[in-house]
Amino acid sequence: MRMLICDCVASSISAISFAMSAMASPTRAQIGPPDLIADLVTANHILYDQGVVDGFGHVSVRNPANPGRFFLSRARAPSMVEAADIMEFDLDGKPTGGPMNKPVFQELYIHAEVFRARPDVNGVVHSHSPAVVPFGVVKTPFRPVSQTGAFLCAGVPNFDLRDDFPDAPNLLVTSGPKGAALAKKLGDRPVALMRGHGDTVAGASLKEAVYLAIFTEVAARLTTQAIALAQGGPVIYMGDHEGERGQPGSRSKGASEGIDRNWEIWAAEAVERRARR
Ligand SMILES: [Zn+2]
Image (cartoon, rainbow, N blue to C red; front, top):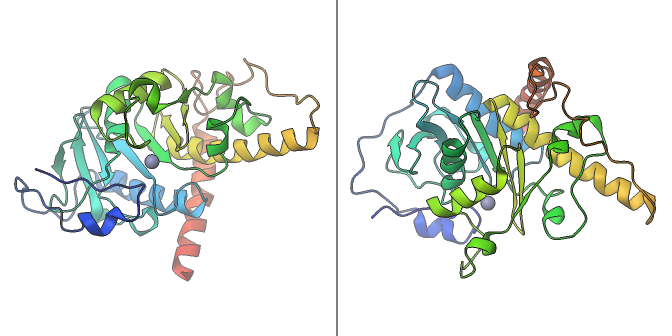
């Protein structure tokens, strides 16, 4: 029986370090299109450098040659991920390629079930984005106050695992049914809060998913600051339809230039700061 690593509980890491699959196939150095795998490695480094993930959190990309499979690192801190760490999984969460003798993320079902439910999605980020988490535990709605958060105008549902799994021993999405419940709550929107946990972000591409994850964190900071500055007074949020102008994450496309522009600087900064660590 394959053992899974808990990516949210540090104490479990040592316990699963010996997890090996009896059914494992030989380890391969790298899988998938080299450019896409390189982007996935960069995405891991960017998300760490921008403060969206820490030792926890993960990012995936759908296999363009097989929509029923996706690429995701083995269980490893995002800042440490290298091309040889990338694995391939099917939509049941079963490993189908990469370093098969390594522990995997316990919450990989988030990715599998979002990819299954959303054919339009090709990149998924799950994180414990620190400024976002509080919005999952208060009645104050998570609404954007700035243009860079326009994609949140689509609405941000709040997934509470205990609604469907009242006896769950923790808040982790550790099975296909739990992942499917999260994907259902996400619906056709780009971001879902996860009560007491973090958020999950779905993009039309890997780069869009990274963009949305970073600007979700930025939006949470700005909205929090606006509410505090208002001192109980009104806050002027973006209107419901102000996110439908070709913004990343909106249903109308045409925003890839903005995504590419940000990706370029984020990648350069991540490389520079990583070299200094
Ligand atoms: Zn998590």
